[in-house]
Length: 201
Image 1: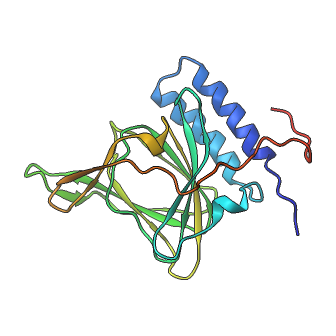
Image 2: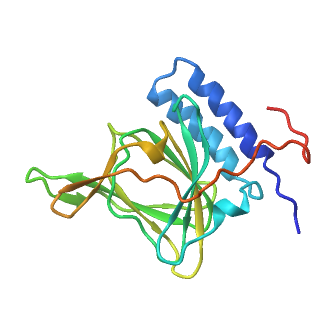
């Protein structure tokens, strides 16, 4: 059995903390943050097993880290075969990095009558790919596991504690239903135990 190597995740968190400490605007955070996330998801073997477990009926959203000042959070999304989200928004900026498997993201826009309709072709993410989202861009979308026969895992970074952000899911007529997602895990994995691994952050 290969030992878990969480040093890449710890390094990512240190680098991202340094990024949000600087007086950058959203555009620069998304640009630099994309490069950091792309580096993280370009390798595997660092995600704690407990945060990569699918559920038979719905996708899972596991918290990996929440900045104590709510400047950003990092979560793993775990998709069982064929699973998908409802159409929803975020209301904060975000980055989505594909770690395992694949997923599709279909953007939606609101028409003049208030109804929602797909905008453009669905975006497909494969391992190593990163997508950006932001409230002033296309913030409403639906995400699906690309595969009907396997689990997929993506890593998301948001500009807030996403599990506590009041957001909305949408019906086809554009009707909003408020929700706060919370997280699937009842405890947070200890990724800071350095006793078995040397690392510098």
